[in-house]
Length: 396
Image (tube, rainbow, N blue to C red; front, side, top):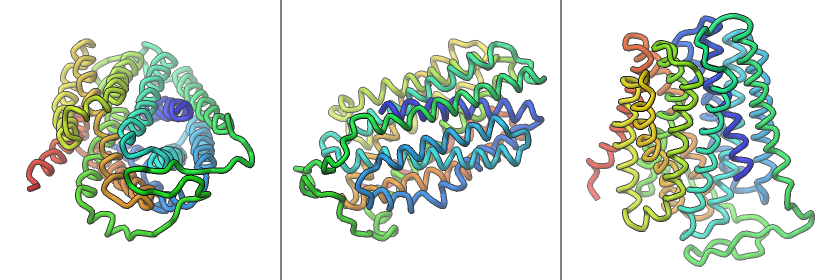
């Protein structure tokens, strides 16, 4: 969890700052849409393979360390890059680092957590992500300040300093994996009373390679992938395009960072409350509410961004509902497949996420061209509504 907070703080410090760097170098909404899509290109190719790897390896610590190091190297590359092409290459590496870390972390929960504690495990894991999504934009806002000049060497210097700080924060996550390690101690999985998983004392999990199409055919998997894709994409598009909306309306980077942090703080609260919520409503009901409610409230944000408090309220409510979705999709997919296929299934979910992160930011950039940057956020909210509608129109 501590490594998750550090790596996600680094990631969410880097990403809004990159939007400001692209603007300072003469980029526009279309360029930002392309660079945001490039972030997910390599993960689309590698996600399923990495999921299979996570099912085979005895310990996932090495993957966590590798993900943290890749995030750090990518942030350094972003700081040094002065051309759109080099920024795009560094963003691709940033996306790979995030993917490696996320697959390792969520596979560890899928491997070790008993079924009756899986909501809690994924809830805390994604809450750590949300804390990073809170701290990263706040740090970005503090480092870039309340000015809105957007040009000049001092502005670029502040941007590059923020990116170098992001590299240091990510790198700090790597040594955490060595804390509490005991060389020679047997690795074992908890015995699952509910699903008959591998017995305690097994050195590595049994591997039965279930075909991808068979995983997708299991009830609920495809729709949960669609829901997860929509939920993640709206966060990505918010992080990338809210700075543009702020720039257009004269809102300083500091206040944009505060608004993004408000969204993340609300997601932390909802994820901590998730075990209590699933005792009162079904996971499907909560997931549909997450999609519809967050889409409606976040769509209001570009219209009320200049008066701070209405925008903060809209993002808090939207962030609370948005935060429910990701851990719910992880649990529903984990429960829908065989125990030995959970790593692959969760990686398949990430593959869908990354495919959405390629296509939707490009589409959002095209929408933003005639409608302005707010159009990109409205487009992502429409995708949330479409995902909810797809569930509501399916017969039981």
